[in-house]
Length: 199
Ligand SMILES: N[C@@H](CCC(=O)N[C@@H](CS)C(=O)NCC(=O)O)C(=O)O
Image (cartoon, rainbow, N blue to C red; front, side, top):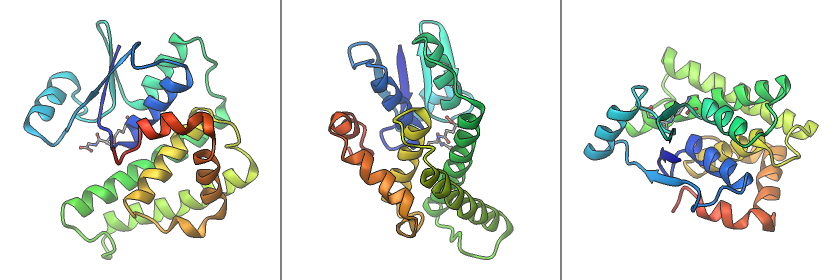
């Protein structure tokens, strides 16, 4: 089984941490680190995955695109329970925030100022503001107490967006405590280090 992605992508990191949660070590799968903006990485991406996004998974002849579908594929392979509808909704909130944060990041990398009063920028900024607020409420309510796939996804999003300085997360107490609690878990130290986007 080969997982293609980049070390910086929060969508890729969630799958790497989900593999670790299921005790799938580096001996049992290969992580292929693609620089999707380099000539070689782009050529590989175009050959393998027409969405031109990472992550994607190759298991024998089976190609699986999109982290959400990769998660379902792996959960089935490891005989893990499916997400509840509530967890699916939490994941949708996280994915929508993650997509808009990636968009804001790519706008910045493109030299555009997403604080300008432009419809497309306003839509992304409005979405992330509402979703961060909602996710903070969900954490405070106890929806992310367990280290399960939605928690993994939330952690990867917050850690990456914070690192990239994409949002003032300091104002959201429950989210900050959530990140600190996870970082303080000794059983997660090694996998968090191994998948840190700064590597
Ligand atoms: N819905 C996709 C989103 C993946 C995604 O947006 N990946 C980013 C990296 S963080 C990417 O490949 N972006 C390339 C692009 O937008 O051109 C998933 O869950 O896998």
